[in-house]
Image 1 (cartoon, rainbow, N blue to C red):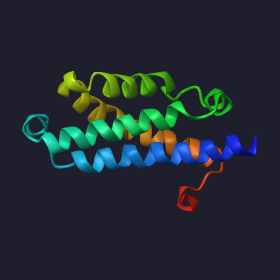
Image 2: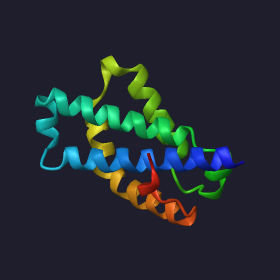
Image 3: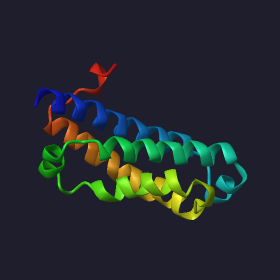
Length: 123
């Protein structure tokens, strides 16, 4: 059980960090500039992939305690980015970063507080 709690701590902190970084990297950009900036495309895709991988590794017990988080959607996004890397829809990528990361950050912060998890203790 302790190993699962530690894994959840690490994964939830990684997910929060990835969502926060996606917001920071997208700041000051537009959907039009995303088309022209391959580096930004790669960064945002990778950060959402990390987010989905991290949340997909959270224990079933933790997911059950927090059913409002879109666990399966985040994992599906990760799978889409990892397996359809050659055909990523930039509109979808941009919309996820713009419309979903802020609410997700708030939800993750609430979960971390409820689980009494301090990400500053992360290695």
